[in-house]
Length: 113
Ligand SMILES: [Zn+2]
Image (cartoon, rainbow, N blue to C red; front, side, top):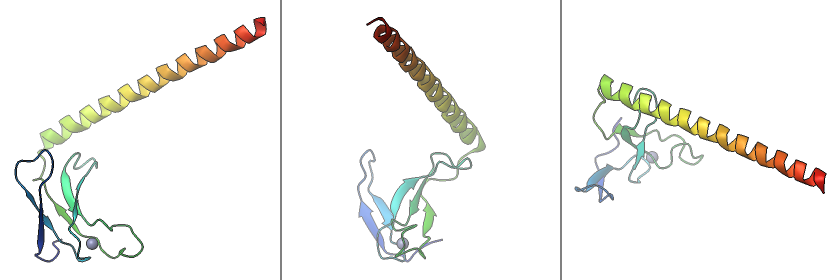
């Protein structure tokens, strides 16, 4: 869905060229956001900055910024995300175990005093 044809130009950090931000029905330049859905992980899109707010809830402006992803890129990114999450869960378990050991050690120390 395309808003009106007004555009706001802005230079984003990490990008060589300025980006033309579409202006949605609210009259504000849309925001560049990142999708983390399974269909489009990491793909950027323009969305209304008021999306979900009570005042502007009717605005559902949406427009892709990045081109469609190849099925291969999708599989690779989802695989990497899954591995990152598994690593994070493992780290949290190890940290919890460390804290448990610490608490047990404190209990034993207090029992001796
Ligand atoms: Zn809007």
